[in-house]
Image 1: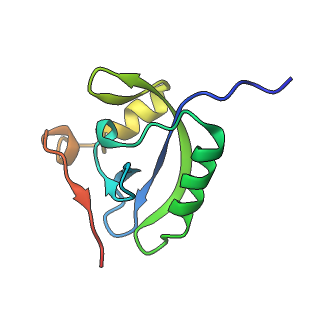
Image 2: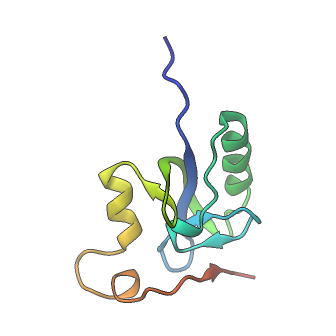
Length: 107
């Protein structure tokens, strides 16, 4: 029997910086998981993933990651996504020291 669908977010890596990014409601890419669009429907999730895959000039390696509705927005349900959301672990910089939320843009 197939597993029931669980909520997802679309995530990828920024082509230029390599940072973890997430697809937002408006189709923009954001660096904060809490700003991502939480997708509760499998067909909608697959459509948004397809949309992400058509943007190789911005995002690479797009996939659907399990998430749940948290107090501040989508939150990870797996340690891998918790780790990715925090940024590089070899030294404290970027997401580990900044609390700001921003949109990704490469034009």
